[in-house]
Length: 146
Image (cartoon, rainbow, N blue to C red; front, side):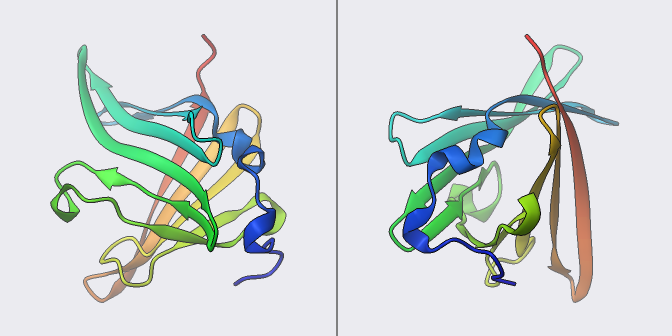
């Protein structure tokens, strides 16, 4: 799974520039948005995911992508999960514009995958074992042009 993974020190935050901006996905529960921006710390991107339905906005999670000495981490803090604490997923592969972050110790998901289709379409997937069976969810976002 670690094919084509750059050495820990060679990643730059610009490698993840495809995330920057505002993305949306229509769901049965409303429109889900994911927004990313560059942090003041040049080794991080920060963001959030939230749902809008009938003019009500609900925060789903706060997001961080951090380049650290031992690797790249995707760090979500999901509202009402994990006692409000962040969970760290380490980048284990970035082959062919598919970015796989993994935390085998987490209950679900164990993997978070991002794969940009083009500059206006971003796909994401969560997967792993849930109650003893393999499970996954797909998220297909389009860029919001403002």
